Image 1 (cartoon, one colour):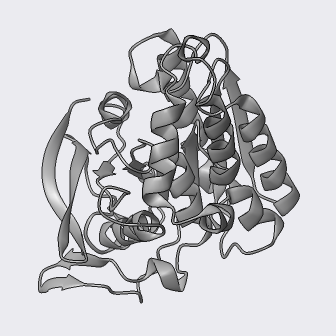
Image 2: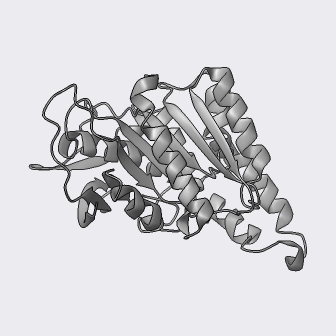
Image 3: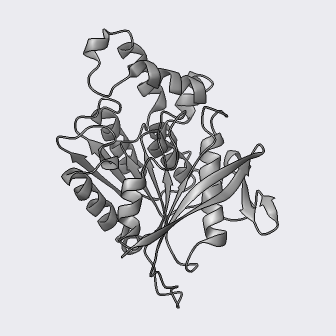
Length: 297
C-alpha cells in the first residue's frame, strides 16, 4: 500500500496558525457501516524538550504506518518557543477535535495519540485530561473559520508513548545535576544543558512541572479519562532513564489503566525515528497494540 502526504492547517492558537502533515493511505475506502471499523486514526506529537522539533520528526514511522493502512495527522504545537504550559497539550486536544470533525472514516473509528519524548509526555497529558478547561481554548479550522468548539469530545482511545518524559520535574532535576558534570561524561547524543533550557522555556516553574507530571495526575486521581497506553522504552536511553518509564508503568497499573510496556535492548533515545531492525520491531509492536484497541474497550 502507498500513501499521500498533504499539508494543512488544523488550528489557531493566540493568532498563530497550527500546521499539520496528513498521511493518508491511497486506497483507503470509507467504511460503509458503523460496525465496520477502520484502522485507528493516529495523531503524532513530536518531541524536542517542549521547545524544539517539528511535525516531520516522526516521518519515518508515520510513513511506514501509513503504508500499513493507518491515517496519521502529524502536528506542530505551541511549544516553549512561543508559549508556556499547557498551550501545547491544548493544541493536541484541538487536533483531536479537528480530526473528529473532518477526517474520520466513521463515528466508530478509534483515535490514538502517538508522541515521542516530550511529545510522549504531552500525548499522555492530553489523553488523560482531554476536556479539561485548560484544553478548550485552541481553535480548530472549520468551513466557517477558526472556532474553539469545546463541545466536541477530545477524548482518545489510546496513547502510544515513545520514550516519554513522563515526569518533567524529575527529569529537570536530573539534567540540571548532569549539566554540572564534565562534558566528556555526558554520553553520546546527550546534552543535559540544552534539555534543561527546554524545560525552562516551556514550564514557568517547578510547580508547573509537578502539576504536569503524569505519575502525579494518575496517583492523585486527577485524570478525566484512562485510555489504553503503550510505553516504549529504549534500554540505552540517557535522556529518559528506564526507571522513569517504569514508575510510569506502575502508576498506570495502580490507576487501573490497560497498559503495555516494552524495553528495546541495544538502542537509545529516539531510535524509532531512524531505520533499523529495532525500529521495524517497534513499528510492528505499535501496530499490533493499536489493532487490539477495540477488543480491550
